[in-house]
Image: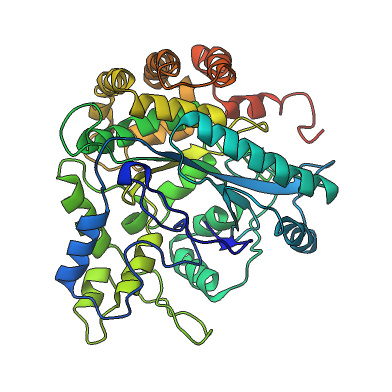
Length: 451
């Protein structure tokens, strides 16, 4: 997500042929995705292209993670680093040789996107090494990384001033202030999983697609960590998720789950509003009103395949199919290694067949509570974002799923340190109906949380 620091080639996400070779999509410099062709694309061609790339099926073999971080003053963590300090720090980071791609978000947040790996152990090792290198450089600059789903202290302030972000801001402003907060104040842990087998079953792509949207609410509740804005409680355990639910529904809600996944996603893409139309001369990008991509293909000046590629990067549902599945509902986590737990739990519940079956049976009753409305705008997701694991049903489901993940991690070859971290999180939070947001809220009582 965001502008790249080092110039590095596109990373091949090819675990079992599933994780496609693509740049990171959100607000990215790259068009990424389908192709770089500049020829016009018809409605039928666009639908066929999306249908063909959204789910690349086969044995689940690869895993990846994308980590977003706020950058703050080392000794005064409630103070966001100034633009001048960020420029100096990011210049110092450029020479680093990392296995992860390092990019900058519109608000100056830093993101590390792992290369796809063949195992959970490989992802944890490579990203941990990269983070250690990044933190060492930032420490020399008097800065540090902070893991909150939403900046608890500071108002949104854009760091990157480029036509694409000007256009995005102008478009999202039509729906309210949430878009600017998402661009400049939010941070997440995003887990990338292979789509799964073509055939039915616990590891089939249809089951994994459905499970991601129902289990996603449980994971959201368990890892909620953004209860504050400008130092005050918002009434949400995950304010970050509340922002996504309040933004443009044409690009932030999930497609219907009662349809064949490829057809549902292709229709979703074509019916989504066009956020912006790019220019080649460096001038302002156009921000059309009431123009879907489908309508654009029927116009006198139809889009190109590269326009379709870029349009795909402007869609932000909670689960995004990009050949692989990108789970986007998790808040950034506290602590230097807090990100490892959501990565490990998610990988276990999707890539271990026994754990996946347990998770499916556990969350199936929650689908009735979700009802017909898509995530994240249904009652289940709203409860997860607002209450976290204080919600009894979500707590009960989380307990079962976390214990299933703990049993599965040895089968996935997870290191003892990873298993211990998941067990500690389960005891500290899940078993008590708490999430990391509750720690932040508790610290508000009786003392200045900034100290």
